[in-house]
Amino acid sequence: MISLKNISKDFHGNRVLSDISFDLQNGNSVSVIGPSGCGKSTLLYIIAGLAKPSGGSVLINEREVKEAGYKTSFILQDYGLLPWKTVFRNVSLGLKIKKFSDNEVKGRVEKILKEMQIYPLKDRFPSNLSGGEKQRVAIARALATEPEILLMDEPFSSLDTLTREKLQNTVAGIQRGSRLSVLLVTHSIEEAVFLGDRIIVMSKSPGRIVDIISNERPGDETFRDSEYYFSQCRRVRGIIESL
Amino acid sequence: MVISIAIAASLVLWKAASLIMGSPVLPAPEKVLPVFVSEIWNPVFQGHFFISLFRVCVSIAAAWILAFPAGAVIGYNRSLDRIFSPLIFMTYPVPKMVLLPVIILLFGLGDLPKIILITLILFFQILVSVRDGVRNTDPKYYDSIFSMGGSRKDVLFHGVIPAALPHSFTAIRISIGTAISVLFFAESFATEKGMGFLIIDAWGRGDYVMIFVGITGMSLMGFFLYLIFALLERRICPWNFTDPAHIIKRPE
Image (cartoon, rainbow over all chains, first blue to last red; front, top):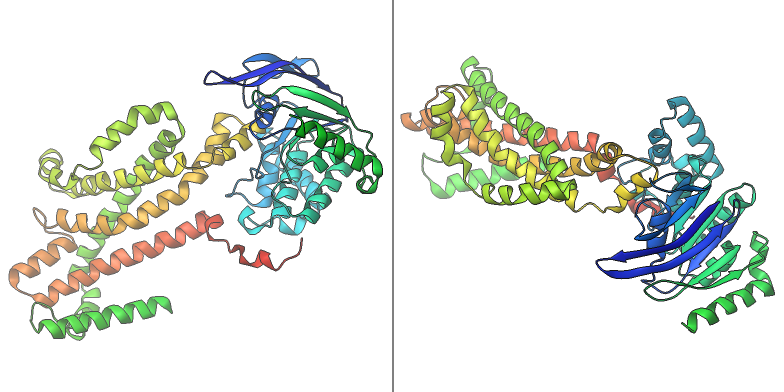
């Protein structure tokens, strides 16, 4: 479980995040949505251990996060794939860093590449992949280390609608079959509603939580056709428009 | 194919220049090339060629070994960059060739002063290219490694070094012309070995064909070194040579 307790962040004397507190239970998901510059990405960097909060703390399973990569995998905006590594080496990097044996790395990476249907691309470099393929590689890389928490920073923003929905279904499917917690930052209301068990709406800078909406989502693609989904999208839109 | 066309074009230009000048100082390629081919088998010419090749190769290797790690570390570490950048800024524009007499006085007349001079010039070119390349690398790649629990050592080996490698190859390829020019200068006095000496000696004797045999030898040396480093770059940095064009036709 992740607990955020009164997180604040200042950059050069300017407050960008203020008093952010919420919990994320194991196996659940939270979508964070808000206007540009409200500190959504900064919040993910703090949870990932890549940035230190100016105040407050992040606890994962009651332990304060002090270093990056503790129980978390982070999919950065624009995927963060290393251009100089092939798909196989990108996906294996986290395991290598965590000192897994070569045989275990090979076994795990091949398994996840097959699950994500990108095994035939294993010897390609990122520059030779389409946007959807890059995102599949980024998801495979994040899941290869079997994290408890998956952090995603606007993961599908640069994809076309059909590819985006396909990958949203993939993430929802992965989460449904596991105890993986997902924390997603997005600009897209539809994405936030489709993937979040709760939707956290943030205000303009300094980012504060203005509302937390519970979302009864089935976690499969039929959800997109339901009246409840549309009403939830309208509700989130209304809150954002009122900011 | 492209190389053949380039060689043919160079020969045509050479021939045209020779005809236009109409002077024995610029002999035609058909006079120079047969002598060059026969000199290839001459142990004296081979001695000059290989000592020059040795000097330039050792200099490139030494410059890379010294400049690559320094440039990568300075480019990555902002604190070190703040300390060393002003020093690089001050010393980079200084023409190092003027140091040749001092280097000869300090290190004698052998291979060492020539190697030191070429290394010194290449060092700064590689250092600046690698440092700028690393500085301009998107920090998201380093964040990506840190986010997996990577240490600074992991970032260095999986991020900084691979990001810097193509820049070092570019610097070496650009510097090869400079290295050969400095080699000629360093070999043009106080020595009796090397292609630079061969050209200067032929100049003194008024043997214009031999001057051009030397020029051809040095040009081919530069050409093949360039080719070797271009092939090495393809081998070591294959991600820089991928063709993304085919993904347009591939469905998701």
